Amino acid sequence: MVEYFTSNLWLVWIIVSIICLILELSSGDFFILCFAIGAAVAAIVAGCGATLTWQILVFAVVSALSLLLVRPKLVKKLHKPNRERLSNAEAMIGQEGRVSETIEAGGYGRVAIDGDDWKALSVDGSAIKKGTRVRVVKMDSIIATVETV
Image (cartoon, rainbow, N blue to C red; front, side, top):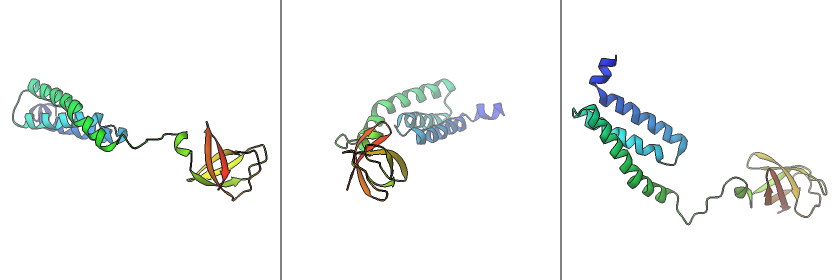
């Protein structure tokens, strides 16, 4: 089996490239994609009969060039600088939902937003009945401060 792979190193490079592409699906930042490109080019070089030293050198150079040339263009194209990328609690502000458990005056209740249930309190400390539509105005950790819509 080892003899088969040593005589067909292009197949090993193809497998490495496919593994890198699968790993890229879990990260999405185009870093591992550069190594998949390097492995694909190394597979082509291996198919042409180059030695293992040349294959590794081509893999390293093409991967480095991909990191320097391809990745920045992909990141810039897909992550536009004018588009604000909110995360976690910041993304909740402005979302609308429905009170799933009455918010007591000066106390807490529950609010359902996009299928998730959040601990909530009203912005002015008043009671909000179950079923009322609300909007998130502030997030403190996992507690949403809401107002009626």
